[in-house]
Amino acid sequence: FRNAVKEIAQQRGYLATFMPKIDYDQSGSGVHLHHSLWRDGKNVFSDGGKLSDVGRWYLGGLQHHMAELTLFGTPTPNGYKRRVPYSFCPQNATWGHDNRTVALRVIEGGDNAVRIEQRDGSADANPYLIMAAQIAAGLHGIEHRMEPGPATDTDAYAVTDAPLLPRNVPEAVEALRKSDLARKVFGDLLVAVTAGIAMHEHEYCTLRVSDIERDRYLEVF
Image 1 (cartoon, rainbow, N blue to C red):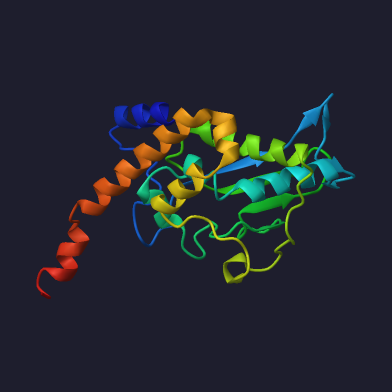
Image 2 (cartoon, rainbow, N blue to C red):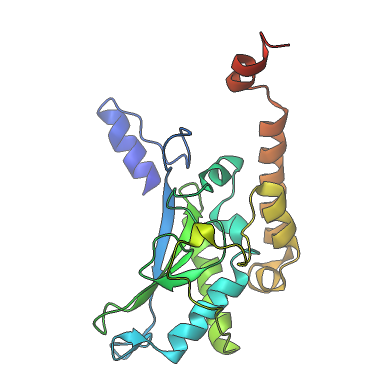
């Protein structure tokens, strides 16, 4: 999809980008995935238009494993610059009902509409890895009947007692390397390669001198 968009734009003289954060004053580009589980034409997440027990366990798995699987959804240093308050990007592993400040938004209504939206991924994510990671987390939650924490139906950016999500690549790499679920689902090799590529990008960006640094310090010191 990204390649198709970029090629079509180029043919018309435009540049399309999925870079997560191109400017400090803009929210950035994210990947919000909507989850529901169906069996025999029925939405298993729905119980009379409300989130069912199965849906709640799936939600618990997403919440429990969110931090350790962050790198699959936000693989480059630029993506973490989205993680500022009121940017439509969550900072902690919260969930709530139709709340766009949380990481996991539960949508209820008709039976077909009940679903869970995970909102922390950035637009540079590999779609196959981010989907696989989130589905694995949710299914692990069902398998072990994981209960989510209390709902946050107020401003999640003001919550101080919720588990924080990684704020940068090193934190995300450390969490991934400690993840038993990631190693079980993806294998040691893919975990090592994903972590290694991310750290290479982090070191590349950290060592380079940016125009912002020149503008800020060149004449000051």
